Length: 273
Image (spheres, rainbow, N blue to C red):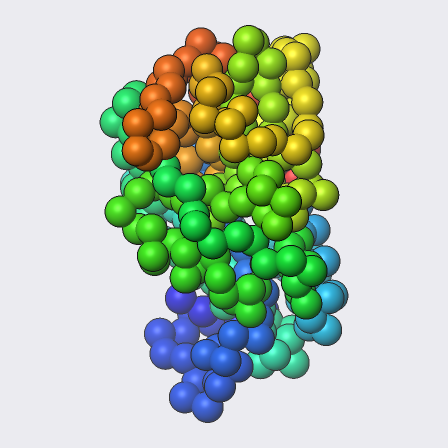
């Protein structure tokens, strides 16, 4: 669905001449609601703003986007929470507008109970990319390609040119070894995930042992627990990395974070501003 910031009229058809929608020169953000409320929009907006600035695109003001998105969520009349994909391209930039695709969010609770299966991509993360990894754009198309190539698995872990673990095609990764939670640093070439940031806030609120550093593959494969973070699910445990590396799913640390996730975010005003 398309919400236009000029007249707030829902449109059922896109303009036929909107070539910019299809040529890939765009930036996007994926958001979700909890209890029908838009979660961490200020964090998503800031990342969207930085991506748009790099690409030379304009986006509507925060207050305008926030009001329109909440109106769009209300108009859906969904019984469950929704996922929203915001798209900014050259056409919407000129119109001070944006596309918002809103759909019901389907959460598979069984996966949180049993854990998911991953693989490690044979392909390495491109070295010295033209577009920085913090920019969310379809111009960095390798992630989508890898997601399709390894779609038999929940996600594929990508290594950088030094062989260090970075992230999945749609998620950030954390491991737990001897009670210490570790995740790759932004400098390894990962997207600064919003959910990743919130999970780190949660970890620090518990004063858990935590570090951001480069992770070797052997460390990941010998971890006690592994979990992923991304917008749609929040936190999800990993039970196996093919062919036969298995993990506690969910382990004690992962289960603790999962159990306190919703209470933590609901009580943090900064995530709902």
